[in-house]
Amino acid sequence: MPAYVVGHKIPDSDSICSAIALSYLKNAIGEECVPARLGELSPETLFILDKFGFEQPELKLSYAGESLYIVDHSDRVQGPDDIDDATILGIIDHHKLGDITTSTPLECWIRPVGCTNTIIKMMYDFHGVEIPANIAGAMMCAILSDTVIFKSPTCTTADIKCVEALAEIAGIEDPQALGMEMFKVKSAVEGTPIRDLVLRDFKDFDMSGNKVGIGQLEVIDLAIFDEMKDDLHADLAALKEEGGRHSVMLLLTDIMKEGSEILVVSDDDDLTAKAYGKATTEGRVWIDGIMSRKKQVVPPLQDSFAG
Amino acid sequence: MPAYVVGHKIPDSDSICSAIALSYLKNAIGEECVPARLGELSPETLFILDKFGFEQPELKLSYAGESLYIVDHSDRVQGPDDIDDATILGIIDHHKLGDITTSTPLECWIRPVGCTNTIIKMMYDFHGVEIPANIAGAMMCAILSDTVIFKSPTCTTADIKCVEALAEIAGIEDPQALGMEMFKVKSAVEGTPIRDLVLRDFKDFDMSGNKVGIGQLEVIDLAIFDEMKDDLHADLAALKEEGGRHSVMLLLTDIMKEGSEILVVSDDDDLTAKAYGKATTEGRVWIDGIMSRKKQVVPPLQDSFAG
Ligand SMILES: [Mn+2]
Ligand SMILES: [Mn+2]
Image (cartoon, rainbow over all chains, first blue to last red; front, top):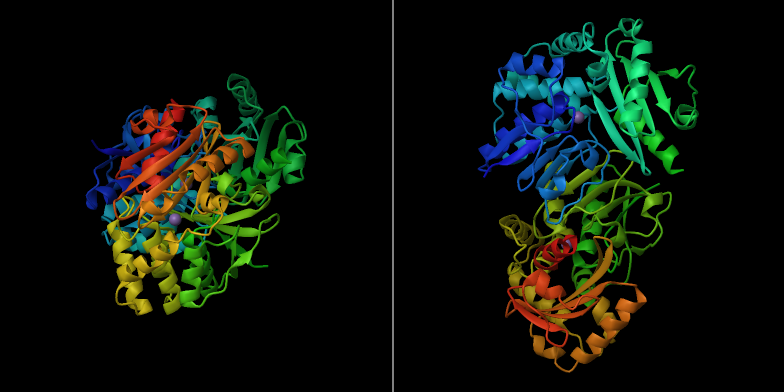
């Protein structure tokens, strides 16, 4: 029976490319593995799969009785709903350590780098397995996506070196140009239903017993949201009620201006004032330099809930 | 301000040698680190430190406001009491994944191998740092201890190869003979107070909300306990009450016969029958082949508590 490799709910490009890249590596060292996904793919991820000739991984929501590798998360709320009935063989991740626990020893490769695929490259090197060109291309795009073409504060020299090495394997001369092409695909929001936009890259967190949902849209120019903000705000309020959440936030990140406007609906009017030192006006606040949910948005919020 | 490297409470040889070996590696790559310990050392560990010329790491119980690397555990109950007020930079471990969480990304090297020092050897190789002979000797002894000289079911080929490599660096011709010498030191129980024996290698676990303490004594011949079992049993009962524990078990492991007699005091008379298919008689049961608390004792017990 093969093991599955699966990323987080509302999969991003890192989760999908990690599942594909890790499955190939595990098969190469004699461990049968199949990539899977917990949801529909974003236009950006579809662009990557199309570009390098991959099918979508199998959509699989239930893992009871299965063995699996978890990639790109270690929080229970972001994983399969029946994760407790599965055997976790390993976790490859680059986020804060979440609340997944196991009853048997496992393999964890967790590093404070910009992307899970940077760690998977280390695993290929450790095992001395050659990376096929198309897998290298997909891994490279995932790193460009997670690090916002190296602009995110989560980006490390390990990520940059990894992109260089993968570009060489994939035969791609200008990785950053491909990154911009990818972000143009990501920035195309017209015609997309509001709820789909809000959920495109949305994660729930448990903060001292409170459920907090945080979405993020990274675009080349924030002006495309000008006509949409009221609708987005109304949908955040609906999402908050539907999920029994304490707070819902949506980061509208301008990757050229290098900052984010945060739309907020919360039980606590002072949420952003407490966490980031800047209050909202009509449920919105622009914060210069905020690019990373993981490194800049979640930790101060978690601390302010804990304190 | 240096970071600390600290193993679990009631430190064993793996926790102490890991703290020393990882601190040296981190210093070598420019990260200032100091080894520390959460309690008194066993005769076995003192033998290793003496043999290779190390001082005892600093006894340090409080880590509020400090940064630290956690080695040889990932369960909160086994770590520093104020771990929530510290910044965890990384975890190096070979046990099941415990309930430690963080609010920031970190470095985790967790592998299903026999000893934390086998993983630390991988870290030296990854960073291309040479291991000094005395550190190699201490690391090697920790692996021989955790794997019961390769007899434990937790022992992997990675552990055996690692011992071979470390023995060469340390200039030790017969690692297994040194292992037996070490286990003879470990087997010397005469004259030791009963409570010291029970706590020599004792760990608390949270099992579905129940506190369960499990100690282990590994000796060359179980006969040395013949006159002591009633006293040990009485002390387990006391320990259970003092700590508000659901159950306390002591594994008396015969490393030559390769099995363990388990002494049990529990709120549930059928504890071992449910978990291991073998009932106790007068609070005792011998189980052939049981050598490893981590791999053979904890997981079935945890599963039986989980229902
Ligand atoms: Mn990621
Ligand atoms: Mn250990």
